[in-house]
Length: 225
Image (cartoon, rainbow, N blue to C red; front, side, top):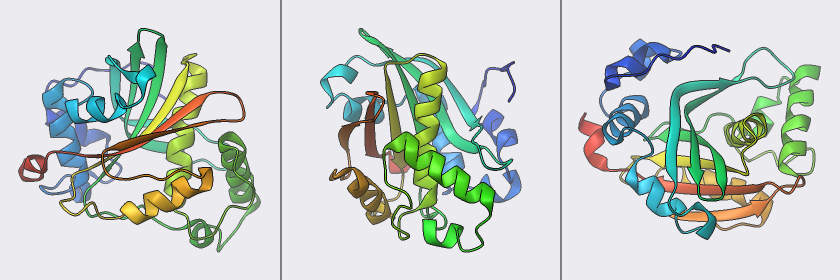
């Protein structure tokens, strides 16, 4: 993981960090929409701040830094979890680690069952680790999207690394119809939580760390950026 970071001066600076820039950097796609939105805001966009402020402890949240395509190493394989954006923010009571998944029409990827269909020892070790961090029984239901597991755990691991007092996972969706909301809701059901558009919910992890989760509808104007 790189330890020297170079500030972005425009949304185009985000492109080179994508896994497949020629494929992902297109008008109407999440990578480009997200970059333009966050760069214009120069930090956490107002719509995310507004939704997270539903949680009293997250009111007055301020951006410390935000890193595009931030990679968080995970056990059980060589591939890290690559967050569309990871942000470190602060409130009057301390730091918050925020992992962000950008979405338009792109799905969340394979379900746990599909991902494990060619199971290896490494995959099972990784999933067991993710479930342990989340306080979810192993194995989890096969219909839940694997990406939501590792994206959420990214926020938790970075909260530990930076000694933050809370973690958050935000789906920042620019889809006019909020596509794949049902997959997000299926993931939250593992914690007996009910999620919806522009709603923040909270659970407490086995370690005592508060975990906040939200689906935030971004401005559709960025679909034309």
